[in-house]
Figure 1: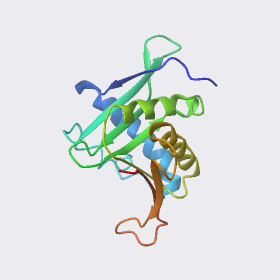
Figure 2: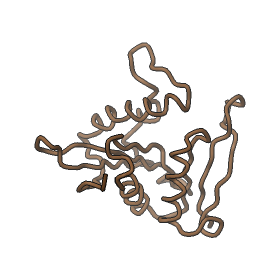
Figure 3: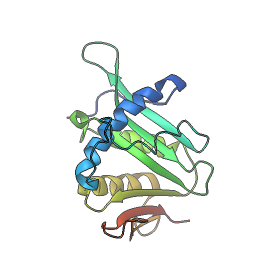
Length: 172
């Protein structure tokens, strides 16, 4: 499937509820990787989302025309570290029906392109698809691996029983 028309816009003040709904889909997708279960209220972990909006983070929604009229939110990216030395992707999700269409790459490059500075992008070792995706995005956004960016495995803080996360970082 080729990328449908796509408009990436900053999350408006009244759209954080839309992100909260999509966040549940994001966490659902990650559940098999992080062995996550919903809490008693039926929702997945959302602690990272709760303090947003914030001066340290920016959210972006990807919109495409809905087949029955109007627009459909089909992805989101949250960039954090805006007040820190490094920017990083806090969370990223695209609608499964549009994956492999170019949507994710366009959304990621748009979000990264809005913020100068050194970058870090982390993903779980066992999330093979995410690893391949973020390596392609890093090359497109920053340049050649080993020159413009590097990847390394790091232990998950406070969770020695988990495999290390992988981190892509731009070279300063």
